Structure formats: C-alpha cells, structure tokens
Image 1 (tube, rainbow, N blue to C red):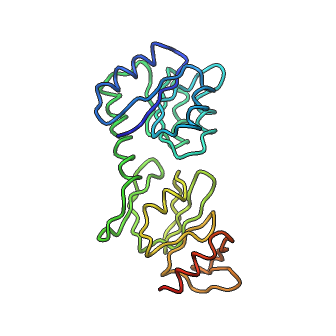
Image 2: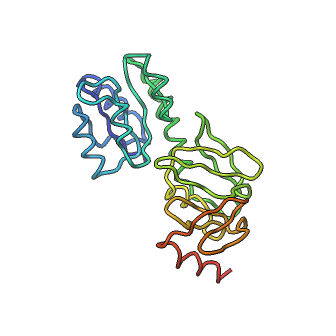
Length: 231
C-alpha cells in the first residue's frame, strides 16, 4: 500500500485528488494540505511514499518544496501550467498531471507510481541476479554481477558498472543496500557500497576497486574487516 499526501493551495483540487484516491485500492491518502510549510513539517515527522504536489503555490512552489525533502519520496506534480513540465521531470517525477485531469489520466499516473514503488521495495531473492533502477525517465535493468561499487551523492546514487557508463539514480544508499544481497555487497563508508568480489586491494583503510580508491569510514571499519575475515 502506498501512503500519500496531497499539497495544493486550492481546496477544490485537493477534493478531486481525495475522490480519485478513494477509487484506487493501492493508495491511502493520509492527509491533504493547502499550506506547503505545514506539509513539510508533517513529512519530517511522518514519512510518506508519494506526494501529489501542486507546483504553482504562492508561499512556496512545489519545486522548491520537493527539493527540501531529504527522504526518498515519489512525486506526481499537478499544475495548470505546462511550462513547469520539463523542470518537474528533471526532478525525476513519476508523472506530471495537467489540470483539469480525468480519473483515467490520474489512474495512469498512480499505476506508474505503484510499479516503481514495488521495484524500489523489492527484496532480492537468491536466484535473482539483477535489479531494476529508475534512471533517465525509465527503469533500467542492472546485472548485479556488473556492479563495481555504488557512490552516494546527496539524494542521488552513481552506480559504477564494469565496462559500462555509470547509472545515476535518485535513491539513498540505505534503500540501495536493502536491495543488494548482504553476502555480496557491504557499505564501507557513508558514501560508498562495494562489491566484495571487486575488491582488488586494501591498504591503510583504502579499498581499491577497478583502479578507484574508496575510503573505509571509521564507523564502518569494524563490520567491514569482520566480514572480510569470515569470507
């Protein structure tokens, strides 16, 4: 079930989203807000999976609000202004609904959100050797055997792959680590996850992977070296 909230300075627009959400069995609309700052306070205390977010609001735009959210939250932007569409998609929005939108169009957007939500919370099964990662406005299939290391960049990740371009995705290291098998990958720093099989050398708390030097963070050092000893 996807936990969602809606933020819009127009009461009528919030009622439309409430009505549409009631017709969808995989979304729970927990609250609605017509004041963006109140929504931010709520999100900081009660994390949600999905935002229905108006862009053109007087006190704080939807774009500005979304940039302030630190957690990995999906967003569907809603607005009456088409000129905001490009910027919305640049923020890796799930979809962009142009007001007034029909229930059919709404259902299309939330179905995309549900599919992506399922992927990012999917646990890796032993027989599963790949992941689906959302990047460049699509879901990209990545073979886990090709992963060298994962680098955290604020709210984004750069997944470094063997003989391929890195894949950049909007996701936290914590979420990525949950998707990877613990016997094959380990977090060694607040900004890095490495594949055990790709470690070439370790010297003075510096790991070499594919010629790249990766530091071992102090808080991760004990667990990392214990994991190495048990292998």
